[in-house]
Length: 271
Ligand SMILES: Cc1cc2nc3c(=O)[nH]c(=O)nc-3n(C[C@H](O)[C@H](O)[C@H](O)COP(=O)(O)OP(=O)(O)OC[C@H]3O[C@@H](n4cnc5c(N)ncnc54)[C@H](O)[C@@H]3O)c2cc1C
Ligand code: FES
Image (tube, rainbow, N blue to C red):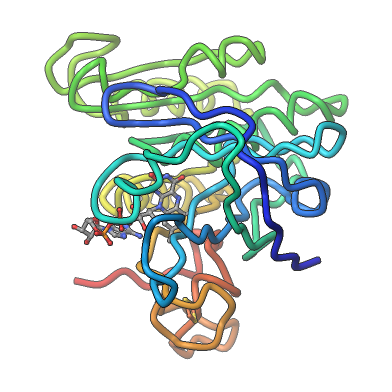
């Protein structure tokens, strides 16, 4: 279901240095969203012809009709977005793209960097809510340069999710990359013979590191790609990602409609 709603701002608050939570009342979109999908936001205060900005969904609640995004202020659009106030109206389009599968193929390991934790929060919430027998609780692995880059950790912990952190400067968790605590857990799972499933969103280097580990272990891996988008609905081909087709051919997929979530095995990495 695709809707374009005039959504009231319910809350707008800090989510960490340079990051904000924006909660919108968009009942039709909230009811349709699945984890990993995104919304396309028309930022008030920009000229009418300005492009919309895509954001992953941090949370969506069909009962309250609320859709939450967590965004980083990086440029003109997000600077203008940071100025919207409670009660303002923001046009938002969704539910867009293909999200994460929720089929439970093994212990769910979620790996995030920066605002990449946003779709993983919605995913973790659904996994906890819909927990089936044999599907373990998700574990979140999150990394950043310093402790200030570790976002929304309290929100994951409030869901009962175990959070394992790493920072480059050692100010929180393990000193180094998030792949260090991840590799420890993967080694333990290899020893016990337990199956696992990887879900990731963040910078490309992290996505590839996670995809490589899923492929090496022969386990499913789901990668949420962050590509510049223009139309958000498949019309402009601005958001191309090379993928491998079942017959081995390489083809151009559009992240906004064929993704943003792809199977690790399907992605053809540049370089
Ligand atoms: C599917 C998807 C989900 C996203 N989810 C989130 C989210 O949950 N939270 C969040 O903060 N951001 C998210 N983004 C990125 C967000 O859309 C951009 O940061 C935003 O559009 C920048 O707008 P701006 O006008 O402020 O910046 P601009 O002035 O357009 O650009 C400022 C800087 O940010 C870079 N930039 C712009 N867009 C992107 C992008 N897509 N990826 C990487 N760098 C970019 C530009 O190259 C430039 O260096 C997502 C992007 C996609 C495609
Ligand atoms: S953003 Fe236009 S095709 Fe994907």
